[in-house]
Length: 388
Image 1 (cartoon, rainbow, N blue to C red):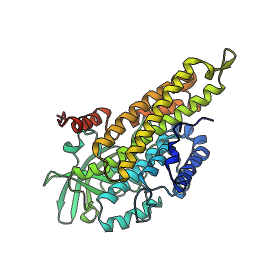
Image 2: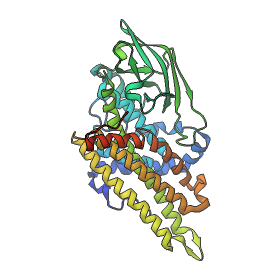
Image 3: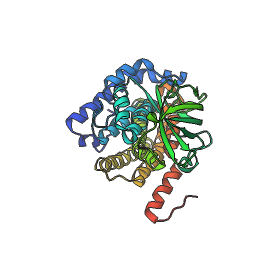
Image 4: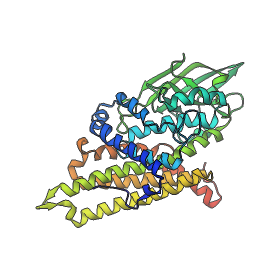
């Protein structure tokens, strides 16, 4: 049996939490794995799965109240890992909706905003997106957002563009981050996607996360009421609070992506015959599996400790950045070794490995590049900022 949990990290979960993890695993293996390669190839999202995903009860998993399950961030990480173990696109959908969209409202919204939006989002009756990245602004979002917000009485006018926005082409609402032209501070807005002046186009020709329907949003004199401005988002420091939480979940997601590739490669090695015996009997193949499992086990352990710090309320930016940067780097190595083990068959979609290799490239870049995360950690450990 191919199992990437070599150090039995799942045994750190309570029986109740582990039961939910296994429920998610069973769903992903039975409902998603048989169909996902076809959807990935067609660049489409399996909308028919949404009611079943909603029935899992995992949306808004770590939040208390407002119809959310109120479980631990450790469990949330394990769920993210289990989803990515089969498909990184669906885990990204989960991360965008639960972590970025719901997380923004939970962390920065007013009581009224939480009561209005979180229950239907937890039930997956409403789907959210997160609009921060822009065509010309990625890593420089903290001080260089070009999307603007101008207040006139109780109405805000938004103008600008957002790019790579997951769920935006079909979702119900998007958290738009824009620079207030009056005070220069970044503020957040809950924008319903049917609002006049809000236009979204699907980004075509992607080589990674093809199931995710990323959107390019154009805001042209888009009017939003003061009631829909996130009440407690008054600077980029508040945006960063959300990103700190979700950066940790991307670390878990990358472990899941690596685990899925490793387990497919191990099963392949146990059954693929060359020179009259399974290739798993060859030393160099075992060495590849050893290196893959080492990466997975070390990053699982890193993520587990990170989530413990998060649940204790002591996780800092540099903690999340170290995990995101290291885990995605190790993931990239691991999926590459898995493809290497399969030889030419590794590029075939029906072997799954090629999909993991392609999707890993997106995970490696989003939620902070390796270089940006390295500088966040570097500043913390040296006391000197190397940012320009």
